Image (cartoon, rainbow, N blue to C red; front, top):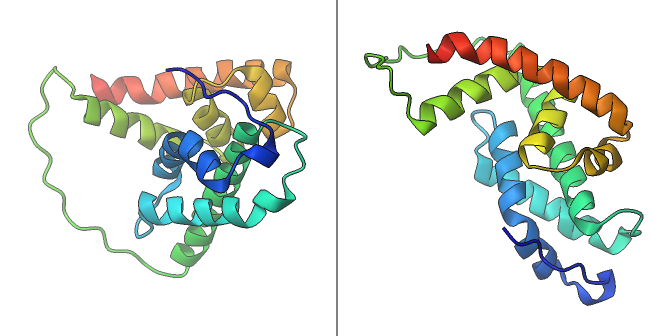
Length: 172
């Protein structure tokens, strides 16, 4: 996948910024979306926040890094807000039919297992994993999160081990 060429902010319109980043923003929204908030609703909120904040973009980082930061912050806030609401409400989960498991796991089953395991991580580790899954280098993750590259490398090693231990029994 070819990265779009960086343009000075003055020549980049909101539409350009959105077009260049919409897929990665939506992937982040899929991770942070929690029923009843759908990924599309969260995506709209992220897009609104980008539009609202674009005039105040200072250029201290790349525009793509800045968009990642907004998407993560909106996703985290949305998830926390829903968790607070859900603490006050008792949810009755419907009975789900579980089909017979075969040795051949579909991509959707693997994705769901990974998502369940990521949900078990703390908020900071979830953010790191989402950015890691976006194939961002540790240097860019460091700019987004404010952590050092070395600290991210150590945390990612631990996170990958935790995810491996969580996901392996789900896919056996």
